[in-house]
Image (tube, rainbow over the protein chains, first blue to last red):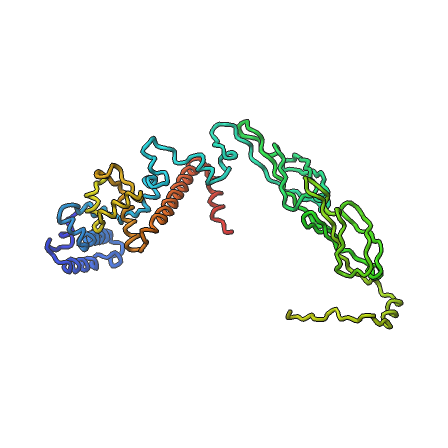
Length: 314
Length: 108
């Protein structure tokens, strides 16, 4: 590496302006864009630029003049490493939370705890360090579609696994949509003699024509005739446990909600049985001449406007 | 490894009492004992970082511990990720690596 003063062709006591002028002249002369394909010019341009870098900065020029750094050292000078350059590499461990401990025997960079903290059980079994000890087989996940009533009442359904194996899955009464059943030991075999993994079966509960589920309770809309609504009477109500007779009180109306205690999801696992809520809907049915004739002359005892106070803006 | 005297020539503008306090606070962790500290490159870069945070980015010294702690955690995490990448590189077959990259670069 040449002396940067020689490179720029200036005396050692040149002023900063002299250095700048010399640099600009040479830079123009050797600029790679003005000398396409000319490798010599490009190399020369880099040398000139490096010399200018060194001499245009009073601090580095001073250090060069004092002999603290040489021109070759400057030639190799890269942009000053940032803290990040160290921190992301091995020296950065010095400033880890437990960095003070590193005076002792060198620890592995990854403790079993650190792996578990970062990746859960992906690489370790239930948080226990893997090592050579027998590892449990992996859990396998499946979904099983269940009828609404099977989920409410409980049922056994056969699940055919990829590979042809079948599993008889006991769906407990009161199973909710999305609930996951764990079948111990029905997952993947252990790779090294440990216990088998579990099969995790997510139950997807289908919908029902009449019933909807509200936790332990079942709801349905129950159609009633005009006379059943006005006069009351016994009606038959379907429930998950089979039809049940229920008394509709006189003067019921569309929207009246009647409760059948204990006729929802049956009691299971310490949860009390739910109720069945029937919301009445008055159905007029086919046109009836007598009814029309009656209504034509009917003068209500207490005329009322059911739409009173109804406004689109309210 | 450089002594505290060399450090002061490299970082003009660094006041001895500031550095002393930063070491006491454990923000800078040189080797050696008080009076005979030795600074590694990363210590020098860290002193510079603290100077820049304080003087140029106007981070109050009261707020510096939390900034440094977050930076330390970030770099620790990045080193772990780098380790993980290196471990995958050494242990995992080419097609697993390819499908991993495909999975990671997939648009969601």
